[in-house]
Length: 458
Image (cartoon, rainbow, N blue to C red):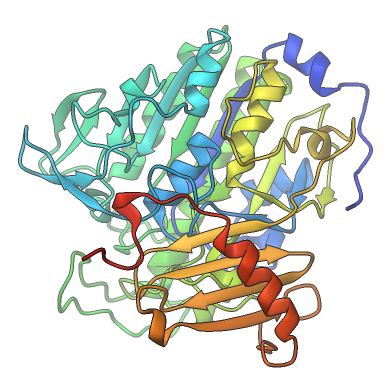
């Protein structure tokens, strides 16, 4: 068992009676090392650091996947990628406008937003969706969200000056004239203002600091000239050229931080800060795209790997929880938690039944210090690009299987992430029985799905 930290008189049950507001802020490709409260020395993040100083910082929290769409599906449905409806980034052509969006989440999937609707919460997703295009089953309005504003497709979210964004199911023409992050934040602040007198759930999903690297002209937030730069020149793909990628990346992270503080300031202005739980995290590890130099900023902290890896740097994320009077200030949790825990945690928080088939466990006891915190027996991940990858984590051990889609070329790596958190020593040959044990467990973690076959069926 991991240590639990004491808290005041508020418990999960008493909090549920007050119908607390919940704001879940999901940054895009932000590394665990990009925040001051996790060791960042260069980029300024005072607002998010203040959340940690007045709340709880988790040291071992895992995203749903190492890329965007499956991570978001896992978060919203409480099922890990061995059972989730969406297990990878996969495009789907929309018949209405001919644009490629993402594979649509099925209508019968129960999302955390639908959990909140059972208690008459006002719900909104503002930012990037990535689980279905216009008029699809997976559109947020069909998945429990009363209001949506932002990018329906994640490929479209590569551009910060888009042709259009969607408001619910209506395309809003922007003609590449507006910086999307600022529009997203204004809609988020407006939603909080309009719903300050009723319980609400805001799933805020800004695209910062996902590439491309760009901020409005003249808004480098004091980073201009601070770093030696290696200009990024677009040769292919969807990311534009950037002459100052380091300064721009830092400015994007600080811009996000500034806007997190704006959310907190608004809650205090409206007098609802003490009845609002804020969770801040990232959808996966840091990226290496569009000119970003994660090694310069130590974006993955002490961990190996980046986005698309199943090493710790690809899936271990920052996770901060802030709730004045309920979560103790400057507390640290060593509880091992993950995205698929969010739905059961919210179900326990507001007093509704967790749907069947969910893989997660509530971490409300870890947040409040009340009750016994259950532990995961293991954590499972799978990834459907770069030859296919799987991993299983149990009791400090992690087994990674590479080239899953080509069985005769598949390899296994074994790490002890307690003793070797940087995953520098592959000890598979030294512990063959542990490899055998974890491989057997790994093979039991997934259900077959025709959309997610590692090996093509002839």
